[in-house]
Image (cartoon, rainbow, N blue to C red; front, top):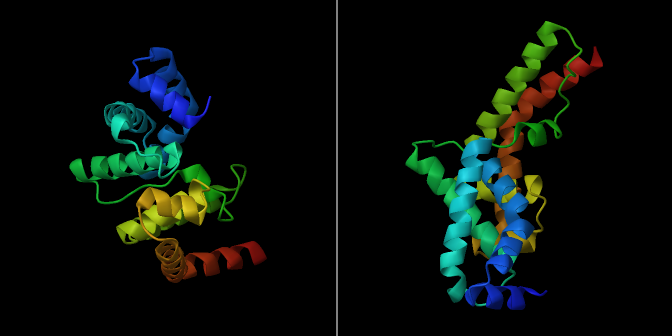
Length: 191
């Protein structure tokens, strides 16, 4: 069933169609919220709010973008609003995802190296949290949610060039902030 048919059936009151819509998009919505909130329970709560909002707003969906992009945008906005409403100025990334991009020691290493790994994780989180909001959104959606620049542009409702610029600036800022960490990590691995 295509997107238009699914939306049509939902708008006609077909509960099975709405359940299918939720089943298709639930993992994506929860993971997107989790990437910003870093709390599984809160992400699941916000995801429920996103689906309620989607249901209530579906009649205004115009098919000028993919349904998933429209839903991503709602999830991102809801997650960010949740952070702000709880006075959380910092957006958290999934630790497991972040660790894949850095050479952290394994669990079998000595206590000192585990402590250093924890310190690097915290510095990484702080560096990402300190990025301007639009840079954070763009880098999280592109690098951690694995979305194309075009998809990020649709979700953020900005041009493709703006996404390219935001991601470039985010990478540049992270490189500057993480240079001491990366340098120290190279020194450790060379020993």
